[in-house]
Length: 196
Image 1 (cartoon, helix red, strand yellow):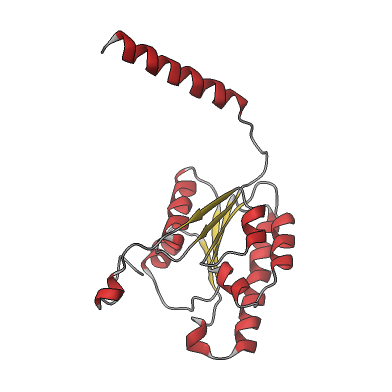
Image 2: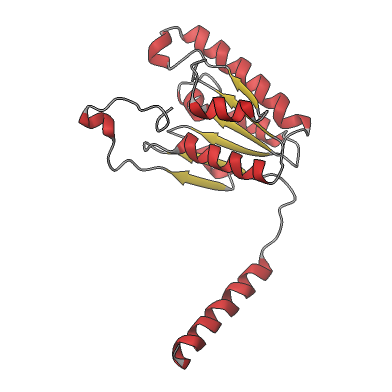
């Protein structure tokens, strides 16, 4: 290694150490938003869920919109004892019943609030809650109030496309998934183990 390269790398390390020393612990669970038109929002949230389980943390899931259909992640995480609540009535184009969809979203959010406020969970995933807000099944105001009321130990991940700007402003981390290519556009149906 050249002396010039070594000197540059030492400077990079010193800069990183100085920035790290300035970081603080928020002493509360973070709020993460996974949104965008690309695939991977829920999958990414479940990756964080697996990470939390690796640290022996207590985790839970409330699924909005998605119905009771069995997915690989649900089977896997329920076998590990994860508190899992699929409370949607199915995708909105399946139900065609706005009142029923609103009632299901409200019931799911009541369960989510119970979990977030209990102090029993390090992480709660609110899967597809952004869709529930997109269709006005839940108001942004009530979701923000629920996030404010969460126990200080509880981190929350909100998934679904079209996250509301107020939710993104509130969050500590926002990631937007961008679709570049999708197999459905090539006529390929959803695949077990990849899509569900």
